[in-house]
Image 1 (cartoon, rainbow, N blue to C red):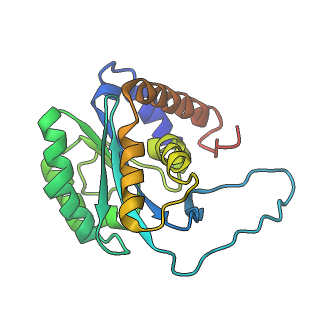
Image 2 (image 1 turned 60 degrees about the vertical axis):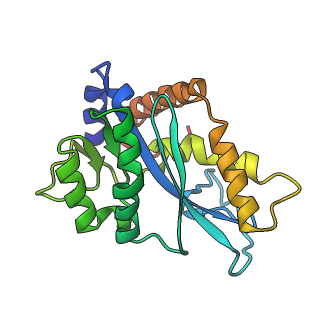
Image 3 (image 1 turned 90 degrees about the vertical axis):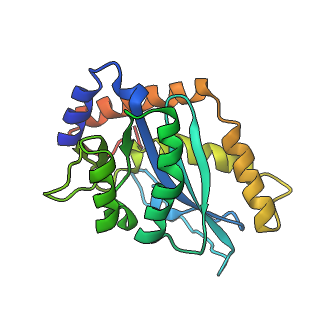
Length: 222
């Protein structure tokens, strides 16, 4: 609720959305297995849903950042796990170079995933974008706003980008190797155009208003 109040107040500034960069990581499995961490099944009765898994399916961890004008990415992390160090390396060596090529006044958002909470990551953000980053923060961090825990329904990538990409990647014939898989992901992300992003940001504004109306409760079922 406090986050929604803060966000609605910041959005009264007409430049806020145009300056904002929202980001996220997603794991794509070659088998098509969905990341259940970001999946919710809503209903009044138990759905008795069964999910089948292919053990040790090859996968890639993908990062993107979304502005009103473009998608930055994809960035493919090496290895099967994203750590605080690999996330920091990506910010330092790739993302912030790309962002600063377009603007020096952007507002960067990240969620509360463990790699984002890494002390060196927060130190980097405090130094590079003091009072211009949104995320899980400590008492001594210079964040503009704290990101609420367990809020995929407010994440731009979760309610728009990742679903769009999967709709274009997991179509027959399915990819059979990681190189083809990465190519499909890249092609799908590159097909996102500005009109789609503007509508997605309008949806974010709407979701924030709805979350405020329901006192910060879940809104994916509405």
